Image 1 (cartoon, rainbow, N blue to C red):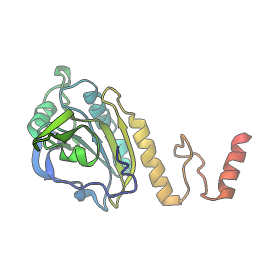
Image 2 (spheres, rainbow, N blue to C red):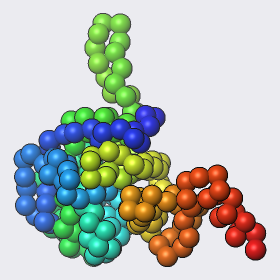
Image 3 (cartoon, rainbow, N blue to C red):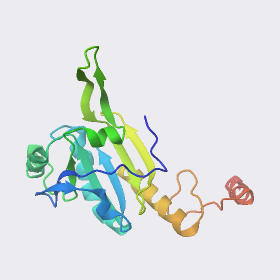
Image 4 (cartoon, rainbow, N blue to C red):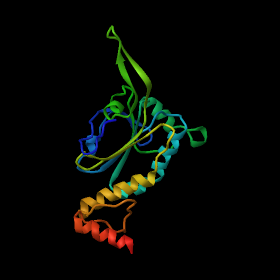
Length: 212
């Protein structure tokens, strides 16, 4: 798997559904450059089992993301029409009605491939014929992108394993704290807790306090 942390987020322009029902043809993360942090997450497929729990959990915490000036964007290999249908299906019928953040359609598999979360790969035979080996869906990848379009955090789960929204928020807090104060955040750090001055004396003082 490619490590994209510290690199520019791969760019793309693709169909998406925004505001819970508006289809757009050329959705791009470029609109957020210099304006918002971005949490871009991939999920395997519409109308599945773990996926709606994550998608709805992000929507339930949208005010928390908005407080942190962070846009949430989902992506799967389904079409924009499948997204639209799922977004307009009530919860009691297995839908995700009420979700308002963008869902990108990656039918070409190019976005998932560029972020290296595609569960499979293309192979060529002796005659030069290409075929896809594996499952043409995305693993549960998540990327935290800063205001300059640089990926600062990535995590990839296998398909059966749902993600923690609390941990995503914690990492945004840690990144923004570091950017503002220049202090680094230790394990399990949360806002209001002590951080570390990035010097030998700083870590020594922090660890000494932990011993008490």
